[in-house]
Length: 172
Image 1: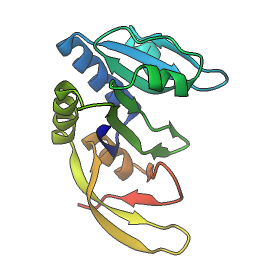
Image 2: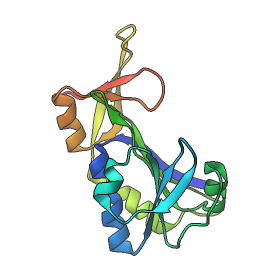
Image 3: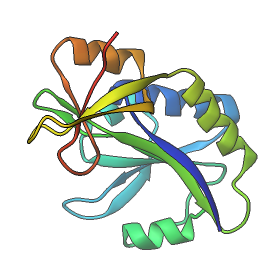
Image 4: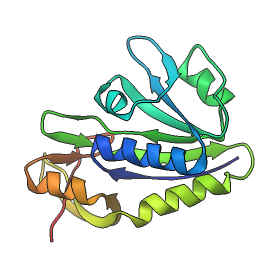
């Protein structure tokens, strides 16, 4: 089994814009995945509708129409090898960490590696991880974020880790 990917901060719209740009450029399908209140997945055709649909918690880019499944686990197993993007939630002045990656039985598709690297190259990196409970700080030189996430941070948004209570500060 092989895998590749990374975590980052970005605004929800720009994540969907990247997915749609890559899908168009590489003739891929985009599937939106909802976990709650029930699991469902469907091909996404309208970027504005997808960005506004906060129930879409994962985006799958694939060369073929994904196989159907009754649960996220089954969907992930049946469609292993596709590129997965989980946009972080954006609400109440907070932007949660997002991730992009692929898990494959054999080698990861070179197209996914190329797309991940292309996305990474567009990003800035380096942020302070801060524990708000005790003020402890650590610099993460490889923490990735977009220019729009940096602007949102400057405008008062808090960049939150995907799990735990760590927040990230971006200093010039």
